[in-house]
Length: 432
Ligand SMILES: [Zn+2]
Image 1 (spheres, rainbow, N blue to C red):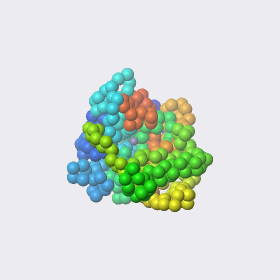
Image 2: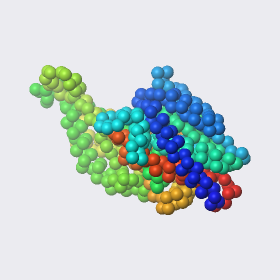
Image 3: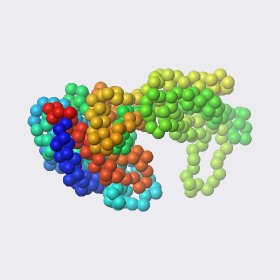
Image 4: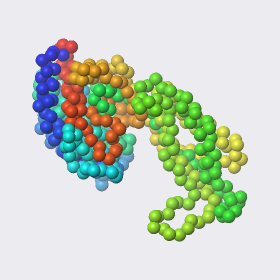
């Protein structure tokens, strides 16, 4: 792209620094807590006002009938589109507008949007209202600087990413909003650091394993069959065979942090026997042999693995326990699954953002893959659009933590990268 366009875009973003801070603060001050899904309409209305004012055509879309959508907590999404003056490709920035619960340990107001020493604080500051604000400022600066651009710029803010994205990107992808015939490049400004390009994520399989027993009086356990002891045998088998197997599987995906470059399994919960009593209960427990014990497992898998094989490993482990324990009986239930997703390093959006990072930050980007999933899965699997990455300001480790913040300079730098990316993709005759 011509040098003078680049210089003008850098200046246009710098001139919008206060606007970027104010926009981030405004977004943080709308507490879009998920669950249960509060203020989704309010944040969409706010963004409608902002983006309509910048010349975008705006649609508010409720994910009617989607998981968790209800009249009390409707799943509202917004998609804004600004057409260029001639035909060309569409570049789409997708952010989720929901935030997770506040939790304990805050020293600032989680919905105050305080600006302290160059950082904006609040729940959702880095994950990902700072990224949403950066993409809006990038788009506004680009459109004002290069009004005769080709193609279109789209910005969406979508619901429920934190709880699977079914009332957000998955719904929109099913309705065709991410079809490659209407969108060609997608950037998701999740907080992966301003000098890294996130190509995708590992796969997920959640399941519940239940061991079965027979209830009896605790003084005569031989008359029953203890489901907790059966689960103990499952856990022992897991330690002896499954965890070593998972540790031996390494991926060629550039997953960060390093510990996530292998297959992993977490036991999210274990429950067995009589339910826990309320804290104000002062009595003693009743003596019973537990007839059920359940664990929830969270298995993260690699692009080199097949989900059927992942499930078969766990089934085989349970069968080994069964072979050793005559009365062993179990059930396994699928809860949730996501396929791994990874965009190629030579995909157009990756190459373009990489060049913009080199120009703005004078460094080559790191290519990473996220240990956990985000909405790219729906754009890839449902939308069938492969040319998609996550790129945005903020430090991933701060997400979901108390005193979450996003750095103002990081937002400015990544907005500049986004604006240069728009220029390269939507000003085809400006020259490389
Ligand atoms: Zn996020």
